[in-house]
Length: 408
Ligand SMILES: Cc1cc2nc3c(=O)[nH]c(=O)nc-3n(C[C@H](O)[C@H](O)[C@H](O)COP(=O)(O)OP(=O)(O)OC[C@H]3O[C@@H](n4cnc5c(N)ncnc54)[C@H](O)[C@@H]3O)c2cc1C
Image (tube, rainbow, N blue to C red):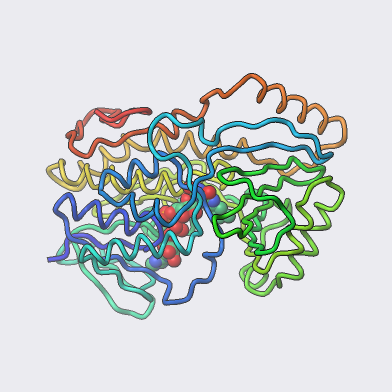
């Protein structure tokens, strides 16, 4: 008998399904997307803590194999001055270190791994409503009117989560960060590859970063301060138009950024969103994981890794608690402080104002000075988090067993 329905087959969904299976709980993943891969053009960095969570359920290797390392960043000013370099994610302290992967590839790898373990992933099932009086505990009602019953419903349906609103109709709406993120790919960009490195440019108007994949393709992103894009604009703005808008903001910099953008074959745009705090993570038989519970702005590059952590910790709680309510309370106690700290940290890293020349100079000097001070592992609380699958969850304890750096 199916015990859990997982709504959303992005990052948290398949990881939750594999973790639940390891905890002895069957599940079905219901994903809204059919075969179309719209809105998955971005790429992302999986951090050490994300790999640690995957390792707890033996799912780290396929993601590692499909990704490539990006463990250091070299910083430049818009005037072409090298400001210094630093390890990404606080530097290696054991574990895998940061790796880049296209979102579509991450989804594919996680799906294949889950399906290979016998987990059912149903596509084209968009959650629309729930019936909390269902015989088995809870029923998901999908847009096409179909219905599935289970004992638990796990909302892994991302930043615009329908489950979040079904749990709490007054849940806060995602907050637009003021920045559209463009991600692009260029096969013939005029750059010297620097394996394992991101080049990050604090430009005169915008921040631009790029890295080179092992096949020589340049992957880049730029944060464009501008009003939120509508669904129609997201779907209809052409690559040529994105090139025009991005190069207008990059061409005054002494950097290869504008030329990389010009050379790109693909460009995808996403609105940046976050949710500072979601008051209710669970109600009755329903619970949230990943961006559905706590979306962070993309700046810190950590949302997917946190979604993986959530999924594994929730499965541990369901394994150890006598009933779902106790499991959900333990899960929230273990996760809320950590993920909300990430949301706040990532929000501070953003900023949409274009600094004037003096502010830019002060900023560049400060960055350069900080980098000269040598690596400071300020991200250790994020990247060195460890989940011990075998340790029992301390039920009823306010902080549980997964401390900021370790698990019990
Ligand atoms: C431009 C950009 C760059 C980013 N870079 C990074 C990075 O470098 N590193 C990082 O860790 N994170 C990054 N992130 C954040 C990261 O993408 C998210 O934190 C992560 O995808 C969250 O995983 P999730 O499973 O919670 O949600 P998602 O990956 O968004 O998956 C949610 C799934 O639910 C499905 N769904 C939605 N509604 C329904 C419904 N009603 N019924 C059924 N299914 C539904 C969706 O189709 C989707 O497949 C970035 C985000 C953006 C926008």
